Length: 500
Image (cartoon, rainbow, N blue to C red; front, side):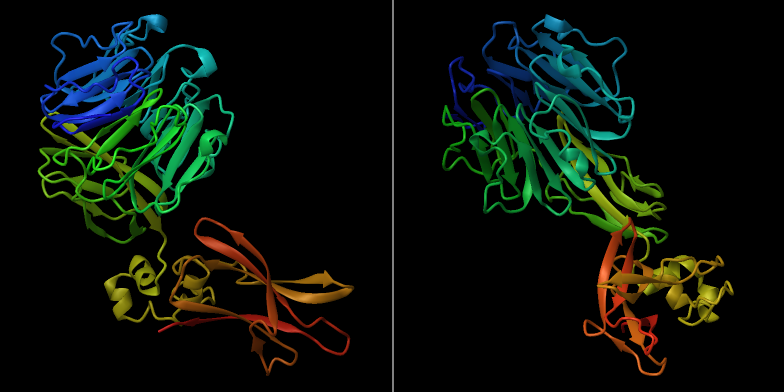
């Protein structure tokens, strides 16, 4: 391990000097590891490289400047410049050192051993290099990507709706596992594993059982970032603690004690490099999910960086806008769902990107629902009261809210549905209704009776038999505990009452 004053720590395999951090680097703002070489992006927008140089991957082009991001492959290197163009050097195999004609507006880059990937500002991906595993075949449906990660076998993008897209080859669910989720805010893939972080800070892993890659270490706190390498997984917590697990043939999982707070880390074929300089350009806070209600104004701001020269925000939910002068997101969201907004700050040639998750729902509080559907005059006139029925469909406002309906649009659908369920040669009355998911200020009570005078509810009288989840609602079926007989009629009803 080599640790020097400019804040880079490197450990693990050092066969080609990939851990021999130069002593004259100066201020470093980002690092990247290839198979057996290492890149460092400096605060002045230039790049340094060291380690194996068999194909010129460490021969940084003369005059390269204004670099915002770097990535390293097997025997080649990539740099993203401030003007959105890409520079490549090193191995010429598969034209890795040749940039596709007309490639511009790039916001993020990634490498595998024999491929290059460029994420453009419009959410599309350009890929070139080896045709193995169809890594160059980015699906045409990839149009809303906000982040990209790549390995020798698969490529994954994180999309603006919190989902993941992927292509290539998988052996352990590295692609399909991530594609089953729609609440992701971070993603990273290695040669035999994929890591993802959800909006509620849950770390998900898919990968080979070798080296316990598919196991999440216990005791992790709030996570800032994730990375993956060759049979390695890396997690950085918000306090700067770095945890590494996986293959340990060169002690690469043993984080040196006392290295300080880690800003970013990357892994090659047996070595790990970490940037630990406390003056590095990282978010001053970790973005948490911003909850909002469709149809109601949003008042929130982004204060993720200290002393940023410029902040660019893209992929905002519809209806919202960002003021780069005040740093405020404002507007009224118009669509429900999970969204990922990409926020990139720049200070000099240093660039830092975070993904800010939004979770926008229909109104889940009666007061919010009233503000969405009724203006001030209507509220003053009592048109928004619980028992008012402005659309004259015989469904009062409280029930319209509870059943997730529009109080100004007549709805002839039944509020509930009754059926019978056969059980042990007897028939039981069953009531089905649709309710607003997550509503905390109303109570849904299913009641049963044999005479329409005395009503009972709760586990003694009813049992829930089905629960179907939808995006904003859930369909509930509740069965009477007493069977229908020739001597006893059975009745069921749904009662909705506010919780004050």
